[in-house]
Image (cartoon, rainbow over all chains, first blue to last red):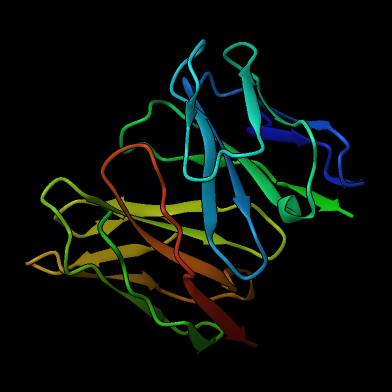
Length: 113
Length: 108
């Protein structure tokens, strides 16, 4: 039981390049989330998926798109990376959306030059 | 969103208890109090949560004031592995709102 896994662990991009961050969970959870954490700060929600087939914007969605590929997988795409998107990205999942404990992956460190 | 206030940092000696306070004076009746922690270079990890009554689990205890305007996370015997940033969060829907948290340092 791996929990929440994320790939890649680390990525360097040039401004304007695109990439997709992958996230998968093996806990049969319904809901999945993408957060970003800037240095010395708490996490901010980018997008979430309450259930398979649905996605909604969080606090900081601009510059990102998401896809809930199936119940296990939730990907985050940067279409045209900007230096302001340099951050650590965390994926999380929970059984449901309301007041449920969230389980986090190890994070992807992204550097945009 | 209801807000929480935590001290920026706390220090403890190994094997001693750690009491982490959290103020949440604007808490609503349906807000759950959740605690997460984040070890260096890792994702956040759930610690404990409660609504009105005190709660215990294998990691920690949560003491909730009678008026629910404050709570205290108690680590009974701190170990070096407990050095982390601890976040107190009020949860009433899906969104976890992380503030700056309390950085706990454990001295050997």
